[in-house]
Length: 219
Length: 225
Image: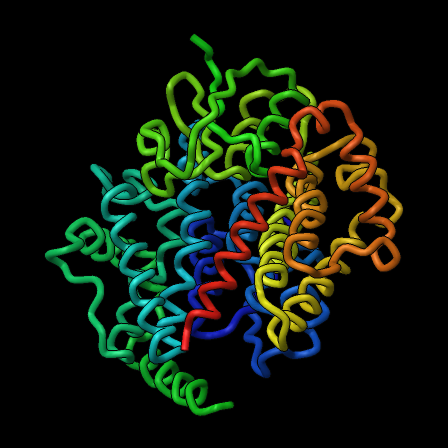
């Protein structure tokens, strides 16, 4: 089915979205770590956003993690990550759009301080509340009985949010306030493909702490 | 009782997109206008997460988010397809639709709403860089979809029209014809297509909305110490 290459960066949550999807479908691929951040190869593959991840299939690049996920779903339809019913698919895509729009808040909270961080923390809480109230009612996973694209899209809440919380010193996802999300995180991390493909939390702490210091001290 | 209802307003390009898609596919629908400023109970019922328009209600089941609705319409009424058949081309259409919304539309809003200053200059530059990418995509083509209007045309379609009103309200020039001749030509053609012209939000309404919003936003930053 053609050569597949994934350009990513460790421990980017967005790279992992693509890794999880490819592994859940058993698609062989070559992983290329983008070592020098904004390498000239990356600029060639993604001239518009200059970001990872980029999936290259048969020499053709696809950018933006959720668009990559939809592409993977269409090329390798087995072990589907989206429902087959158009209405259920629309609901899934609603949550994908939600993830795309709202998840950045937790990263803004990580990268900033003061008033900007306050607002980002508030936005992150609102996002978690919306998911708790409307996204997970009566479901084990967002995808139902098995994980799907929406679970993958929210994967950053399962591991990366905890790291951000520790670094900025604010606990947002309290188990008593977010029982459904808390259970979902536990279940999500037990799925074999996810369990075997999660970046080490301690190593993440080191990397993200260092990066945050650099970000906050640079002009 | 109509099988397909569209909960919308007449001054939103996001709602216009949905009308265009339904009309292009010959789908009958009932247009239900709501007052978004007063959080109509219909909105709370059908879009509890965002309380926004448009919402498509099909057989009583609501779908929100305009591009999500477009994909649903495409999958449910398969005549006059809007998306390309090839998966790679489909990815490209989705990529550019997202780009146009994030970088061109919201970028333009940033540029328009700011008062004169360095921030405004930067926002204008950044938006024009983004528009340049879009210009390349339409060069030499009648529509983004090729010979026929497609998904990307609907996603980008209302943007030049909105930008023109934003430019006037915000005192900026963004989409100038000299620098973006292909985009300009496409926009002019697109707006004249009868189905499109029927549903485009009236410029006066957009201008009013932008004028009011911008005055309010700028007054806030003046009030801050």
